[in-house]
Structure formats: C-alpha cells, structure tokens
Length: 381
Image (cartoon, rainbow, N blue to C red):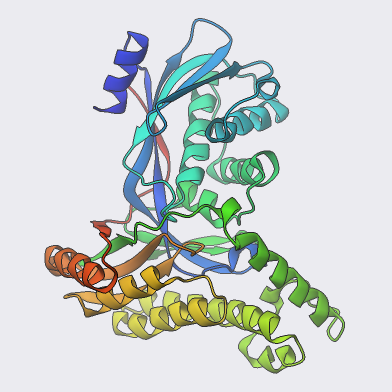
C-alpha cells in the first residue's frame, strides 16, 4: 500500500503533500567525515516517503509504518512529550525548527517507504530530512538544503544522542541525479561528479543489522580523537587527522599500534577519495576496483569495522559478472556492500552475488541495483 493510501486509511482523507527522502550509499570515504575528511556518497532510489496534511489541531501526529506505531506531540512545545526512540528523531527536528524561530503547524503524517533500516543506507538521516521538509512546507517556509542538513545533523548528535558525521544529512539533502557528491567535511564545500553512463550502483545487504549507538562506532571516534591528541604533542598544528597527508605517515610511528592503525586508515582513505574522484571525472573506471578494494582492506585490517559477512559479500561481488568495484559501505559492524556494476550485466550480477554470498555464509543477502538520484523533494498533491 502506498504512503498516500496508508494516509487515507489512517486519517480518512487525502494527503496534500508527499515528501521523498532517499537513502544514500557511500562510494568511498569511510569514517573520514567525523575526522573533517573527504567523502563521496550518492543517493539511491530506495527512500522514505512522508504523506502529510495540515491537521485540525496544534498537534503533530506521525504514524510510522515500519514500527506500526504512532507518536504525537505539540507543535508549539514539541520537546515536552516523552516519546519512543524512533519518534525522537522527528521530535528533535521539530524542536530545532522551533528554536530557529519557525512557527510550526499541526499535521497528520504517515511515514513509509522501501529503505531498509540498519543496513548502513542512512535511514535515520532520510527520516530526519523528510520530517524537516514536511514540517517546513506545512508551516509555509522552506530552508536551504544545506541549512536543513546541518539542522538534522545536530538533531541526531545532540537531541537523539547518536554520534554521526555530517555526510548522511548532506547526501540525503544535496545529491544530484546521475552524480556522486564530493563533500569536504571540514569546509562543507561540495561539487557533483558525474557517474559513468552504463554503470549502476549495486547495494548488497548482508542481513547483519547494526546500529551506531550499539556498535563500537563511538570507540573509533574516541580512538581518532586520542590519536590527534598524541600527535599534537609533536605537531601542535594538527587539529584533526585531516591535517595529515600520506607523506606524513611516518609521524604515526610513535603512536600505540591500535591508534596508529586507526589514523593510518583515515589518512589513506582521504587520499583514496581524491583518487576515486579523479578516476570518475577522467572516465578511468578501470582504476576503481583497486581503489575500492584497498579501502575495504583498510577498513577490515586497520580500522577493524568489517565482519565476516561483509568480507564474504565483497568477495562474492568481485567475482560476479559486470562488477567494476566493490567495498563495504557505511559504519560497518554489519550492513551493506556497495558495488559499481555494468548496467547490461546487472541482472546476472544480482543472481551470482546472492548465490556466492549464500554459499560462503549460509545466509541470504538482499541485493538490488539503483541509479543515483537527487536529494529530498516535496510535491503538493
């Protein structure tokens, strides 16, 4: 049933607004965003959709199909309600919009879609951005996409309390169709890099669920901060691992082995983002296989965020027809693999990769292909 149909069933009238927020897959640049580094995400066709209409009272009512649950809070004082965790993302968006001076209106809304939760495809960022755009439109205002992304980033980190980088909200908000988004997480400068014609994105979900707050993700962030603190004793100008170039890797030698590995990954990964972007811009897709594989190996060995299922999925993808490159994507500890696949081979690729993953792990993976799409959008209906 479509989100609009769910809305009619739930509230007895037609919605007046549809807001679509895509998931994202990160082509390369993992665990670099919270280190002020470089990333290269693209938005995918899988998305969350909010069907909404202005309500008859100053209350915001949300029905989440994924949880079969309802949350309700005041449009005037959204922070006063005690809500379940899933609803706090929406509540936080409302709170921060009010703090910004926007007068919210009551509304009824249904949230549904085909974006998997816990697969490393930024379902939380899609939810935040979709709710923000919905609340804005019902209130009669529209924030610039960058401002909306920054607001939603603060919601997740400060209000919900989930440590995250800036990449997800920027990708969901700013991506362009048929392009990847090159984002400098320190300056927040962006530019759009065309993806090769005849190539699709493949997302290969291992079926291993993960959540940032329940994984060692926070430990990795702390390890990176500690590495910076120790490096500053020798080079005071280092404020983040972004300040180091590959030629600076000898500076890492005095660090404890674990911190040295973490820092080495971040420094090398930033360089790989630049290398991958140049390869895409130059049409040199043949170079991407080696770059992606080096990223995955670094995430597995130096940053230690892969798992046997992710490794097996990468192996299966690289053996499948039409695969140009593959690596784990997202924070790790489960989730998905991203691959670049020749469009004419995509059906065969999906069949072979799912079979290869099942043979290696005994698990069923869920794989799909997608074009690169644009960021969140709203449509009056």
